[in-house]
Amino acid sequence: MKLPRPVKAVVFDMDGLLFDTEKLYGRAILTAAQELGVEMTMDVFYLCVGTPWTENRARMIEAYGADYPAEELRVAWMRHFKLLANEGIELKPGVVAMLDLLDELELPRAIATSSGHSTVQHHLGAHGLLERFHHVIAAGDYARSKPAPDPFLAAAAKLGRDPRDCLALEDSLNGVRSASSAGMMTVMVPDLIAPTDEIRTLCAAVAGSLVDVPGLVRAAR
Image 1: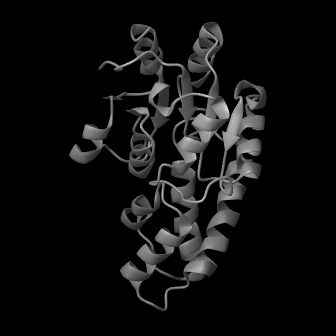
Image 2 (image 1 turned 60 degrees about the vertical axis):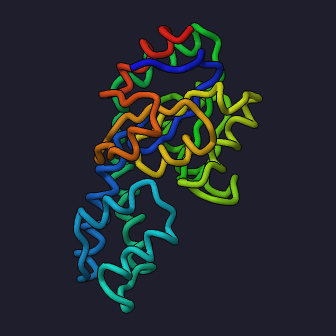
């Protein structure tokens, strides 16, 4: 694994990369479906990871029919997720070490996420990380969601860096597509979903965890 250029800034996804939240979303959607008495499987949930709600709604209707109460499920899903999140969200291995390296190298960093600003503030604040990111690009800050390049292009603009000089760290397939289409050096750190052959072609590297990424950054300097 090797990065093609020195890294001048880093853009992080959030859910599934910084925080072990995707499994909580999975548990929450199954609980919400059970509460409403409707169908839901983990296979359908996996299709929703890293995807905007409009697409998720369409996938649910395609899987379960036009009468599927997708909007009602969404409300119950988010309610159950918040209950789980309030019990505690685990930080993924390697996050603090990666941020320490960026401090050492004086490299700016941002978050580009499909979650809202309030969710970002909650998760970062719970682990004392609010001051460790220079910018946050969240839902509402861009016209098109991942897999479009907009979130990562917005992050590069905030950081004042050419996207080609930015390292993007992602765990989802649509996140990788978004970062790659923005022109960034993209490293996938898989969480719930393994990279496909297509996704591997879009990545500079696939890392086992964030623990592996500092070595890539140092080697590229």
